Length: 382
Image (cartoon, rainbow, N blue to C red):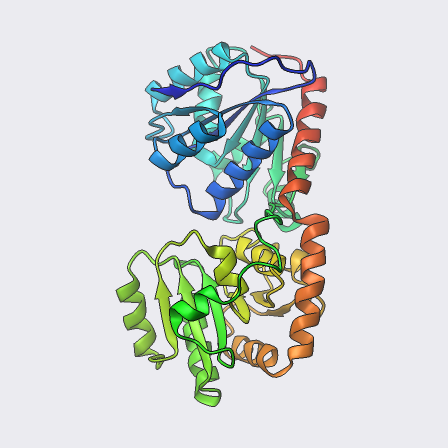
């Protein structure tokens, strides 16, 4: 259970001691990036942050570079007693005031650890809309959970309908780093890599997995490209690019289709695109690539489900379509292609909305304020 320790420095008396618990080892998913941006932002504001994830070289290297206290814990299951005992030691060693648990396994492990030591403020993160089963519901309604951060109003309401007390739920939107994602990002690099001219229209979807509606996007683009051969589709984040390419060819996309694996140059990819599409139809909260695309002022088309309409306002900051409605998706993409004035207006308005409500800076400020409020009101329980 090795840890990377930041040098102890003189801290202001107002700084908080916070443990962030992320029970996965991935680093380039949306959830992981949200955790990393948050811990960095809180550390920059003077707080003592401890980060624990499943062992991962990227996490360890980034934490060491940032001077962040880091531990790699197995977290192999909800009943991983080895990790529970290590969490007990971490709580005591660092005199943790707030635990922020990301995902259900982290919640269960810290609740078990709390049986052996005083439980600090416990904040849960809820970023998906899958229904709560009986076990998970208990993990949210227990009095030992101090507060729940829902990443959009739609998720908050789904929790309330499941019986979670509304008073303990706070909506804090996930954030996008607007210093990394901005309209000045290089828009030529990805087009040169794909061999596209300025006149060819590039539609991009980031994320290849169940529930993302990748097949719907391919079908819609087959319709679009039949009428507009200059249109191209790019999918990013495929674990098996060859399989995705074969599926696209089976739907009639051949020369007009491109697929890439995991990439770190997402700002440049979105900036070089003419439209970003998200066709997710289940499990989502608010799709991160919609925020990121609007942050670089690229137009978006998205399903009108869960939190997406809280960012993508129809005709104002983007276009919406019903989930699994391939013809409606094709029409929305065609509308963006054929109406460059609308495309530019919605992208610019979307950029302003991201800066106002969906930036990382805004998120960090709101999370910090919540921590302070909860710590001030907290009375430790055995």
